[in-house]
Length: 470
Image 1 (cartoon, rainbow, N blue to C red):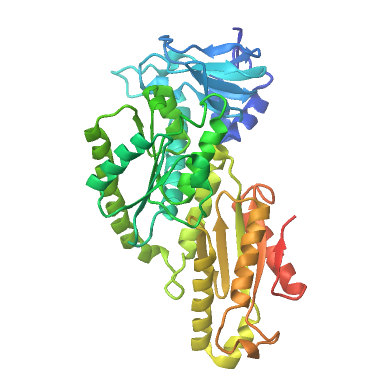
Image 2: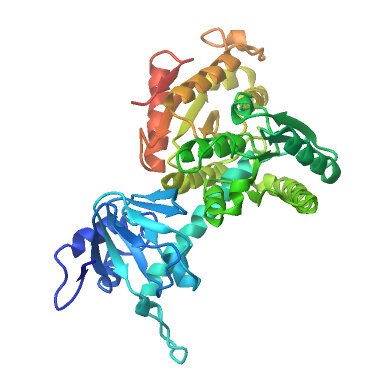
């Protein structure tokens, strides 16, 4: 494979374009362009033809770090597809720099592709020298970005957890009755206070309303999905578990394969275990998850005071901003759109002026309770300020967001609220604006403005309506 140095006596003519392209990637946005260009000068440009191997599984050569400049790469293990890297700035080989071990997967070009290559000798550090290669600036940004993504995923998962102690529900998805019985027995022994529901297939589970929560789901996807052909369906199953607030525990024969375990974790699984397993191992894992459940419950209670609006009990602006930042951070990994609904109580100033601020507070509390009651588990309802509220809808495109916004509008319109018939339009109502990321905006400020513009358009055309962006 031909390598073109990005800086020999002179800079490679494509260095500026490569710097801009890679600098827009999720790992390198915080590196100054001049600094990034200096780092890229240490590397070489490598071209791969379609179907050409970049890395062979089991290879034990010295570690090399690769940054994708253009094209698409498939990561494959035991001839099974694991994941695709197709965005400029995607990275391959960073774990080999940390762990001196044989490569765990093949990496193959799906299209003609180009990468910047940093050879092993750049990562060697003289133990007697206080200096390290500038390449570690690049490496530290990769690791820091991965930490940001992990933190963002944790925040999103936190919003899906039970916020107060109630009925604990565990689901079992398994085609084999005897295997379901084994799992049921382990749950009954190690988590006796939990209710258990069994499903013979994923479709049966997914047909449950999203609002019906589970705290953990133990699933064996093997009878239903082929890892190579049905990776998207497998990811959909895990997402459907997570959307119901549950931790995803995958218990299957496929988990005997390390690459498949890694894929499941990347797709969102919290726990993976191979069949057949000893009853003690299964019971011990369930007991450990139970302990974490109650620890998280107490942690949520302790943190809620700093994240909750005192009047309405909804999330405050601080938590809203953090949640939106988290969704944008994980978007390059999961490519799941999310929607934002900004709502405003119509003619609220008139209500306050007529009935006083105390009654105004009663109305805000009542509207907030209606919003909280009618959002999905995992959505975030927040007070934006004054009489404005924001609903964040993860994993939700425009069409579904409009349906949910209309549900909220009708809930307020049909509610029995104090003095509602004395309002200018004869009722207390809500106007809502809806925008979707990334369809309507590609940054947070623009997304908020898009939804807010829709809200004001709704006010202009007569109020008590839902207005979408676009």
